[in-house]
Amino acid sequence: MTVTESPSEPLGQAAAEASPRWSWLRQRAGLAIKVLSVLAFLALWTASTELGWVSPIFLPSPAAIARQADKLMHAGDLWEAIIASSRRVFLGYAIAAAVAVPLGIVMGVWWPAKAVMDPFISLLRPLPSITWIPLSILWLGIGEGQKTMIVFMGTWIYILLYTVESTKRVDPLLMLGGFEDRYPGELSGGMQQRVSLARILAANPEVLLMDEPFGALDAMTRQVLQEELLRIHEHSRKTTLFITHNIDEALILADRIIVMSARPGRVKAELCNTLPRPRHIDIQLSPDYARLKSTVWSHVEHELLRQVEATVSLA
Image 1 (cartoon, rainbow, N blue to C red):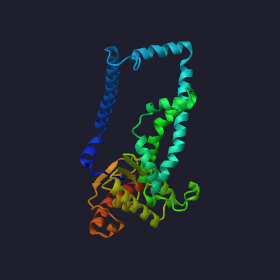
Image 2 (tube, rainbow, N blue to C red):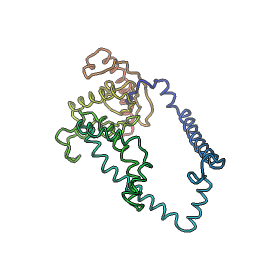
Image 3 (tube, rainbow, N blue to C red):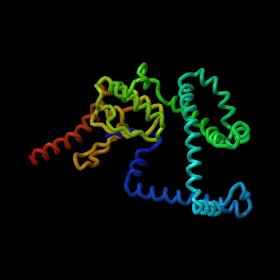
Image 4 (tube, one colour):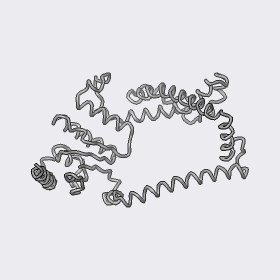
């Protein structure tokens, strides 16, 4: 019922892109661009080795790699090599995550930890993982530990930085305040919704999809979370698709309201919400709000009456 849009995306453009034909053309064009980009990359790769721009010792051609893979497959060694490489990658990444995620969370919420770690991160961040190969050989030899360390050094700094930034994106008002060690089933409905919002924001998606997230909450908690969602939207400016059966919720949150018909579900009406932003709950007291609510209710009421008449006729 509700769409809250980023100001950078005009309503007309969004409506055009929502049409089935435009969507089909865009999908096909996107697929064609992806295929052509891969082919162009392979052509450049092949030309680089065949024309002598890069030594085949350092960068074998795609054809040479395919021939070697065919030999390994016929010798029965290909899958063994794939499993060994996958094991090293998984183990190196797991160790990197085990170190970087807790450290990143601490750095994101406690400034002294970030102040201590920042100089080391600034020093290590520009170094590619290949620069650690000589030291890793000296420290660990050329066994499995050395290969795992290369994966670790190539990933841990980026996991750390992403975790720090993701932790900062989680609004302090969404924290649980004394209930951090509780299981989800032990939290109240409002706290569970705060956890859901925090999880969504940590991932930093381009579009937020919310299907009646506040439907099971009491009126006061619902209003608090509506205010929080409005504040988050003012800060992030993310496009949000918000489904609700509550007209007041749609009017408070949305820039664009789409009313759906009874079964089969079709777009009954599309309304532009002209209420000014930033919005607060007390906007419900304004005359413009009352007029817009009356307009939305007229569309909803028509569908409700039609549904009741259909049910009575079947009975």
